[in-house]
Amino acid sequence: MSTTWTQSAQTLISEATTGWEGIWSLTYAAGFGALNLAMSVPLGVGVSISYAAMDFRDAQDELEWARPNLRATAAAVRLGHVRDVDDAVEARAILDQLAAAALDRAAALAEVELNLSDQAALSRVMARLITGRAKVTGRWA
Image 1 (cartoon, rainbow, N blue to C red):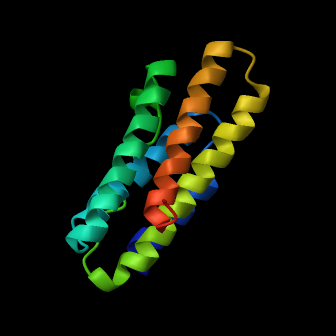
Image 2 (image 1 turned 30 degrees about the vertical axis):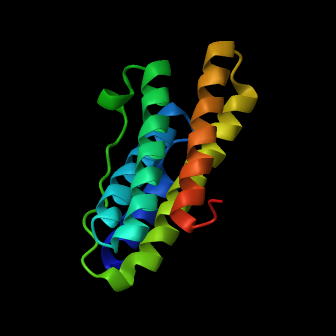
């Protein structure tokens, strides 16, 4: 997996813009990656990863509500399937990195965004990214 997910994720993290489009692209990749991972791991683990995917999708919905054109303008990157259950640990780390990068960009944008409704949307996005990360990494209580 390191030749598929790792390289694609690192490229996306380094090249995603710092604005709304970059946050959306990172969140989109994390959401689909979580869905793919959930289908490749044992059921008990897959449930929490599925919930993480839902959190990432909720964050994506918030972004699209604030900026309806994002789906058409932002890069939609899918990481692919997880073929080996042994790659699940690495896949979780990559999903965490994607979500962390999106969270960092959202926090930075919230600091300079003057529109209150956009700040509120970014706040909701950050909350979902935080809970999604916690579920992916297993730090969810």
